[in-house]
Image 1 (cartoon, rainbow, N blue to C red):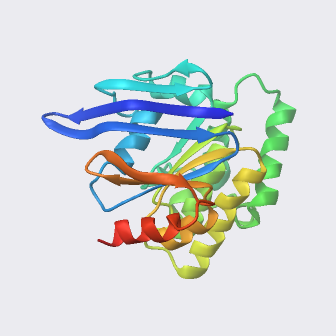
Image 2: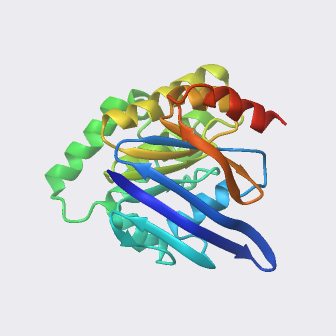
Length: 237
């Protein structure tokens, strides 16, 4: 089943034509990578899906409904969460308080259900449980990234958009993060991943798209013979 379909998506920043007809699809419980050099439109694609940027034309269809141009909070409540590159950890709030903000996405749950959701997140991220009373902004870079992902997971989204999660992190933390992202598939959650570490990204995704100058120039299932090598060659040029 197709969860998300982007059709001929165009986005402008002022006079700059950033997205120039993006087309892509994401299936249920599927991890999809967007790869390419800096400044080609990968982050803008995520921002447009999330409602942070309004598209000029084209459509974003999620679970059979158009969400193009809708407000970010409405898109979030529909089941799409965005983990931006800067993580957006709220200053002055503890780890637990940051997590509880993520509960706002899942409306209609009882207090008991919310408590259970927090405990399940702590079971998945024991390091966050150890630091639950620590200010979120005092965590290490890797721990902040874990918190940013955990905060959206607690709202039980269907699709998570993750922008450059491993940039600047130590290799051992990078490995942990990729394990976490790969594990989302097993929870039935779909992911669109923007990641500069192309080699590692291609190890965990089901499909990948190469973006150049606001367009998809190559893509397909990672099971396709020779596609991995073609993608790496295209990104390396």
